[in-house]
Length: 288
Image 1 (cartoon, rainbow, N blue to C red):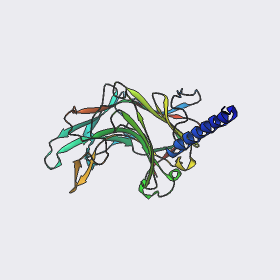
Image 2: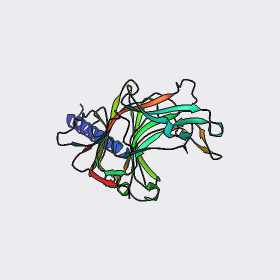
Image 3: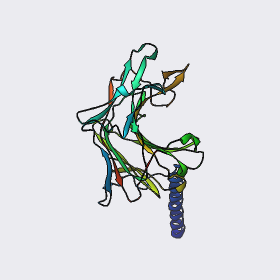
Image 4: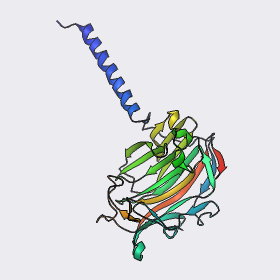
C-alpha cells in the first residue's frame, strides 16, 4: 500500500517549488506587475496640476516643437507638428526635399518646465504603422552624463508603440548603458483613443493602459528622483549613414521598415490631451 503521508509531503513540496519558481521568474523580469488585472481609479486627493487640451493650439511659452533635424531613420520637423479639431497631430510622411528627401515626423516637448514625481496621463490614438513608433516619455537633461543608478536620472518611457499590437514601457539609465523594460500585448491598441499613464512616486512606478496596471517597479535603484521634461514624439526606425538618416529595420528589431507596402502614409499620431496630477509627491522646477 502507498503511504498517504508521503503523498501529502510530495504535494507540499511541489506547491513550494511552484511558488519559488514563480517568484524567481517575476524578479528576473526586473519588477513585473504584482497584479496586471488591477484597475486604477484616480484618487480624489490627486489634484490636477497641469493640462494641455490642445483646443486652441498649444502654449508656446511651455512647449517647443523640434526644428528640422535628422533623427534616427528620418527627420524631425516642426512642420509635422500642429493642432487640428482640438487635437495635437504629429504627422509622418515621405517628403521629396532634394538632398533632404526622406521620411519626416516630429516631436513636441516642454522647453523650460521640469517636474519630479507625479501622475502623468495622455489620451491618444496611434496607427498600426511598421517602421515608426509613437511615444510619450519623460526625459532628464544631460542623461548621457548620468552614469549611476536610475535614481540619479532616468528616461522614463510611459509608452512606445514600436512593436505590432504591443506597448513597451522602458527605463533607461547609467548614461544609456542600462535599461529595464516591460512589453505587453494589446489587441485593441489601434482601434480608438486610449490612455497611457504613469504614477511616479518616491517608492514606486506604476504604468497603466486604460487604467489597467501593466508594470509596477518598486526597486529603489530604478526609481528616479531627478527632474524631467515631458516629450511627445514619433520616430522612424533606422540610423545615420554617411551623415544622412537611413530608414532600416535593424535599429529596433521587430518594428519593421517604414517603406512597408502595407503602410498607409501620411500617418497621424493624434493626441487628445496630456495631464499631470499631484499625487502627493509632485515637485515642479525649471530647466537649470
